[in-house]
Length: 347
Image (cartoon, rainbow, N blue to C red; front, side):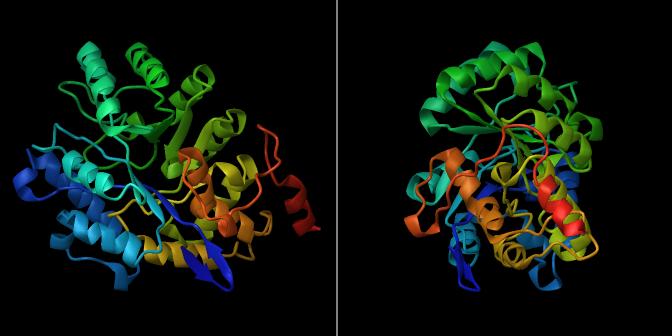
């Protein structure tokens, strides 16, 4: 929980990882390229006081994760969203066993989501069923630009992907988190395009599609899709740190999201260990839409509470203390939001 100016916030970090980017786990040059690209994001977008050494960044371990998130970072609950990247790392990038053990030891604080790749065909479907039973999966994290043999990506509307979503539906895996946004070296930019979200969201209305990184740098495409598909949500991983380096840009991002999809479908994420949550939570709770962006309505405390944790808590059925709850929003399912408020601001 975070408290500031008399307001208390229930914080859910909806996108974290426990990774191993150390040289001994790198399968090839691409493993080094991937973690180096992550570190460049971290170094260039963080306040100077929050920049880690490169060696610290390669691997954190469970003890440090628990300290950074829960002792120092105000987080009440966090959700693992692991990337496999087996073509680049011997044991994969996200550490399944270590993260699952940590989540099993702290079920009140951590939820473990896993991943699948539809290019694994029937064998992958069997593995998904086994993983769902073992991990008690509520969600999965998908990487459409992940390499797999000669393939350098896949689409959510591929026939085999549909087979996997049908099994998710059968198994009760309702929360589909998809990396759609920034390219990470050496993955291909267009394999992270958001346009296939439209197709699956229409065909699987009983699944939630959380577009991580809110589609950046294709925010406009994402907003036009998400506003017509009420089961599409925006994850703020990687968008959050712009609150420090480019506050006007962040104001445009959050202003566009609130206008198009509303306050109930946006989720806070630190993307740990890309960044730690402490400074991001503090900065977001204090953030105001810059004065020069008067076309956007002011960001309210209630909106901040939903974005920082209540929206993700609702999606994952997390218990929120009564004093930290808010009434559900009474909004229409589709179409732009907040037009009346922005008109009032301009007037």
